[in-house]
Length: 481
Image 1 (cartoon, one colour):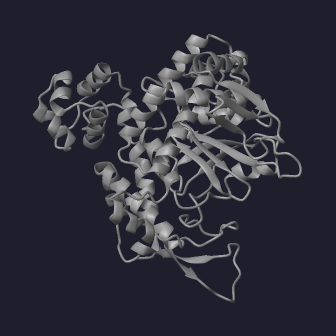
Image 2: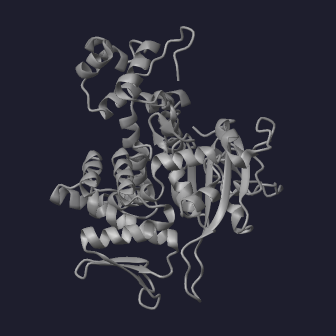
Image 3: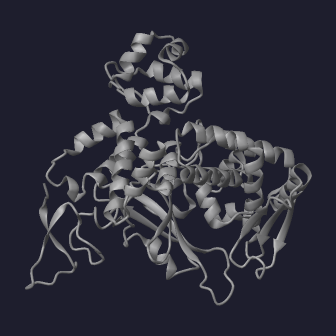
């Protein structure tokens, strides 16, 4: 990102967020940049542009990547606001798209508040009443979290799925263990035993039929089901170590999130523990270097770091270290019924918070081709193009006659990054036609889609018993106001 040919660059809200993330006052950052506090104040209020010299000084003084001033967050916020204001609840209010974009850029805090308010409204509308929780608020003065899962997802997105304290702790642990990937499990088990007096035991399925991992505090034993594969076993040991050795770092990160109820606090701690475990298995510098050298060949990376396909894909979405970034990937995990259980976006892909995904995205086709990795160029209705790969995974094995759990993993990036992927070799990305998809049916306004499951909430449904169209739903071209 640069200020080119005299173009004025106004990045006030983003500049202010970076200053606050650094924990600096306007006076302190002014001293570091060699400008006056009043000038910083004008920059943050978008009354003065940021010069190229100030941008370079900012990057050098605070070791920042100038992409921290890019618009990824604003694009994501805008997509979420656009989804919210497409709801029939706002049908009588014509909010121009530019106003939503201005709100996303200038008032990210308000955007977060609207997201959480709408999430609570959506749950209430689906029949889950908030009355009991609201009454409890009045009785005990506590806050109510409408959806702990969505709250934690918001926290991960707010941190761009990158937590430097945990990365550093994981690198320190790997340096101390000093073992190759294939020796990690034994080294982690020894560390748990010698430093924490915790014995690791692999248990038969008839003893742990419904549990994959359990920590017995009284007997100081970490029990892991034999159904868990080798990468999963190492992951569970690293997770347990993270809870013990990174307790202070975990509490610091959780504390930065502000007041949280018990459910989101516990879920956030578990999520951070999982993050640490992946960072131990795939240490940042070594993993990024290997990913770049191998052109992001996921299967080879999995072999090299003794990890699973999903573990590698998930880890790729966390490579957001300033001045050492990987490709900004987005990830989706979905089951064969279309339920989304994971979604991460370190780029600008506009995942829907309140619905499923588009059936034309071939991530769903992996259940028909379980041993193949599928690739696809997809294009949203605004013309934005992405390159994605998808594969079905099984994890963990379930004893007969229980159904074997299956998930589809979709990993993608903006088309401009695709040339760096081994999966795009030989493709003319500029000429390859993208499959037209939508965020989901309720927000997609593409006509004549044979796989449409419901009409767009922004259009009026047209019912005509004399005509049967390709799509099950016909709708007006004009937006509902």
